Amino acid sequence: MRIECLELDHFRNYASQTVEFDPKCNVIFGENAQGKTNLLEAIVYLSCGKSPRARTDREMIAFDQPSARMTVQAFARDRNFRVQVDLFRGKRRKMTVNQVTVKNSTDLSQVYQTVFFCPEDLDLIRAGAAERRKFMDTALCQLRPRYAATLAAYHRTYEHKTRILRDSEERPDLLDALPEFNEQLVRYGAVLIHYRYQFARRLEEYAAANHRECSGGREQLGLFYQTVSNVNPAGKVTEIAEQLRIHMEKHQIAERASRLCLSGPHKDDLLVTINGREAKLYSSQGQTRTAALSMKLAEREIYKNVTGEYPVLLLDDVLSELDPRRQEFVLNRIAGGQVFITCCEDDRLPQMLGGKVLHVANGQMV
Image 1 (spheres, rainbow, N blue to C red):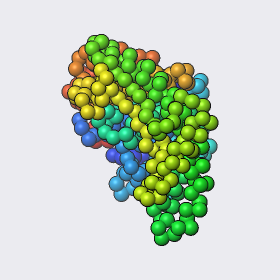
Image 2 (image 1 turned 135 degrees about the horizontal axis):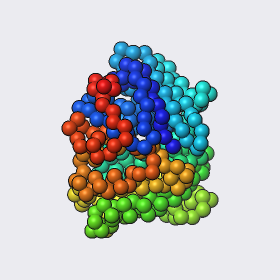
Image 3 (image 1 turned 180 degrees about the horizontal axis):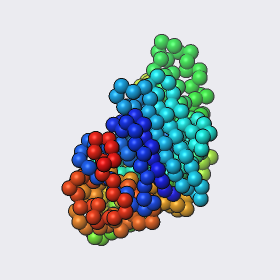
Image 4 (image 1 turned 30 degrees about the horizontal axis):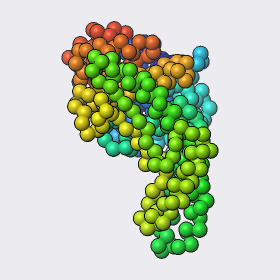
């Protein structure tokens, strides 16, 4: 799969821009704060309906403008696609695929997939469990439409249950609805756990090999999926659901006392270890960067195995922070699919990589 053309209107600092891309390698260079990352953000958004940076869609609309538009011409699964998203300040966004309106992000993710890596992804290792859940969810929502729908349903049900627990002291009658919401959380949660466990197994297989090679064979990366204590994530969905049900029943009194949902995959984590020690606590800066990069490249391989095509890989100011050996490792790993790489003005990457070189200055291709 590949991106052939991107059009931006009033998106971030781009007033109006149309740019065509090389099917293999695209190097985007320029000084900081000129719009390099904004280009990648638009490509990612059009693949999954979510920004890797913005909390709300309004943040991506240019100042003093009522709306923004992103359009991409993509080729995937031997077909041409035109994906367009219009963002508005005062109403819901509008999304179309080949001029047919689509209702949710799941429909976008079935056109083409992306893997995005930026320096902030070191939080995959350093930050709390929420970052690693987000990583798994972002990947699985692009890979499995059922997962995306189930995740949305789980979040809605979780919010309903949280409100019931929060307001139950003033409205005890609300507790009568808890059994129904608990059963929904059990059904949805079992599906999420099943997919996350399968994804984590494949991720460890590829990421461990990547990390071992990148570290010159000196380090062993481990990834261990952690979920509800009494649940066996390797079991069938029906078995996981029954185990979740038992765990939830045991925590009913504690949930009502704390007014919090204490049972379910919203507390999952992906434990990352290097040579048997928890990376979050003990890894160096270099080890952290290598582990995060290994996980992202592993995600790319999983996409290839599931879809038969490499996803579009976007590396935002990443290679410049790596030493020469790690740079060489990455460059050897990115062949076979379309790649976008941003770098600074004085970087040597444009000469090293070839392909199409794009110079960005003040929201324009120069």
